[in-house]
Amino acid sequence: MNVDESARERYHELTAYTLSHTDPAFIHQYAVDAFAAQTADDTTKPIILAFALVGLYLAAERQYSGRNVQRVHTLLARRRRRWPRFEIPEFRGAITVRDVMDVPPGPERDEAIRRWAVNVWQAYSGQRDEVLDLLKTELG
Image (cartoon, rainbow, N blue to C red):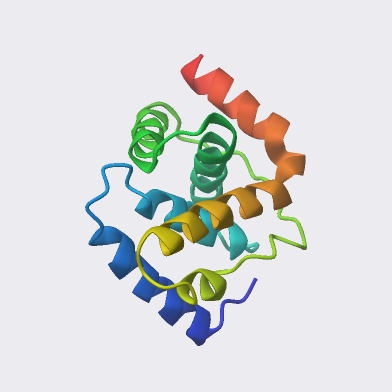
C-alpha cells in the first residue's frame, strides 16, 4: 500500500503523542504495529510485518500492554534470523491513523489507538494460525 504524505505526517504526529505519553502500558507499540500492518506492501521487510502481526495479536487477543508486546519482540529478535512472509489482505481495517488523530488527545485518543490495533488485527485474521505457529515455534 502506498502511503500518502498526509497519512505519514499524521503518523509522525501520533508517534510524537504516544512517545510523550507517561502511561506505563506504552500504547506507542500499538500505533507502530497497526500502522506497519495497515501500510504493508510487497516491499515491506518480512520482520516488520511479522512483528506487527505478533504485536497486534498479543494486544487484541491476549490484552498485552504495549510494553509486554515490546518484550516479546525483543525475545523474537534474539532467536530468529529468517522471517516468514505473511499474506497481505486487500482490506486492512476501516480505522486509520487519520481517524485516530481526529480524536482529541487524552483517554479518548488512547482508546482510539487500541480500537485501531484491534481493527487492523481483525483485517489480518486469516493470518492468525501462522502468527500462532511463529510464536509457538520461537517461544514455546
